[in-house]
Image 1 (spheres, rainbow, N blue to C red):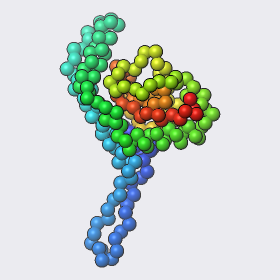
Image 2 (image 1 turned 90 degrees about the vertical axis):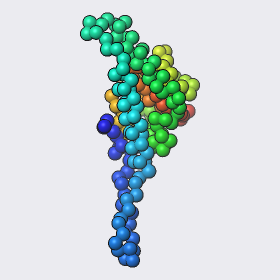
Image 3 (image 1 turned 180 degrees about the horizontal axis):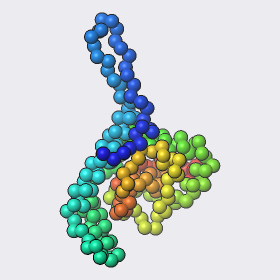
Image 4 (image 1 turned 90 degrees about the horizontal axis):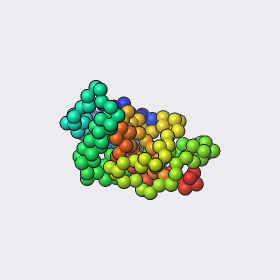
Length: 194
């Protein structure tokens, strides 16, 4: 299982208070923090995508050790096509559940508020962009703005092949090897930062 940053965003699991003496034999129930639960679901969906990716990739032809740049590009293109086909019915929220999206949005807003002057400078490189399209290729002419390291440390950790990117005011999860937009959270950046 891929390591996650769940602990960063989630509060610890809390234990419900013990019941009255009349229930002296009752077990103590654990109340799961909703944020932790949402981030576990997010991790489960990321793992599912990685399983799909491995499965699709294993069915593709492996390039020869002496392959040139054109031959190396072909497997990436084939993988991109196969992933799009396998995820043809993907829609926003399939990878990032709404509760996880809310937690991530809250984390980004808090970071921007804490570091307002730095945020304006760093995010100034992100051009305006329309709502992303799932399974679309990340536009070659769009900025590949990096997420500030302090903010990245507070977001759930992604597997190595996946990346967070700001695309306009939106946060996308990008499969970096094939440049496919897997999912997004719309309007995570306020207009004032832009």
